[in-house]
Image (cartoon, rainbow, N blue to C red):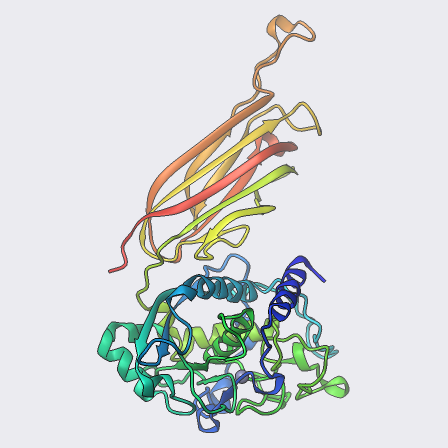
Length: 454
Ligand SMILES: [Zn+2]
């Protein structure tokens, strides 16, 4: 179990202790059967090679803007309220954690006829919580499945520009509902609008951690993922000849298990129907395909301006030699808007950004070179700055044990720069003659100064 697994399980335990109740495993979500047809048809997907859509670690992150609409009764008593904004923000942090996909999967299928795929790859998809809107209306508050149109109309009446983003509606119906919520698959009709409609879980007085798993699952459907189990209007594709068959989830040949039984205790897949969070590599590829080709793409291209974009990261010690090395940071000190992934930063909007890098060269221990060492700052393939520690001075007059300046050296570089949405920023360390460099206390930080969201 890795750290994130532990944190998630700890969080779950705490919420149960506080009296929260998890969703019924069998009803985390439903998709209306008719909407299943909207996903790309088998004939057109036969032209696709899904592995072509597996993103590499430096693909710019795709940001999807989400608005949250909370329908209270006319007195504002039912459903969540304005005091829960902090919890909703935390829920989106959890969702982005799932889509970073650091959780250990326990369902990976074994397939002897297909290449074994690396798992736990970053989906390169993140969600920005854009607006949280509250409505007071008895009828809308009580709205259950399967009709979200009155909710859409209320939103359009308030501000029709919100329909450019992905919208989640949260109602609090008096009657029990078939599932925690429902949504639709993306369509090849690029004008098709997708919404998520969720129901407040009355067993939970505050918006709970479980809601992050439910919404992460619904967002998976919005991005074109089926269930790994049978049912809920979104049964898996079990035909091995189908391009969308997930052989890294179900396996293939004689070891194939499709659908995966939902009741099994060893299935932590996001689409497995339990409170779960891991995403397979082919699921990532399927979401990336849908983002590029189906109706969900408009939510990635839509206008959305995050209120705060900032990251800070550090490395305590770094040793490397040879040609330039892209740095991977041990610690993330801040990551507002989730544009930082530990190695690269993707600009979520057009704007002016500030970046700063600093490091200490230490050639006195660990065999580090006393020659030139530098840290380059890249914006895509453009070099936008260098922090440079020059070669140490020769010993004074050639006298042994004389002080030698520059063997331990601190250097820094900062810049303000105008960049376009999707630009990827990273740092690369190098040294003269590719000699071994020993660096301590490397710091890298950045934030958005002014956005151009219009
Ligand atoms: Zn579902």
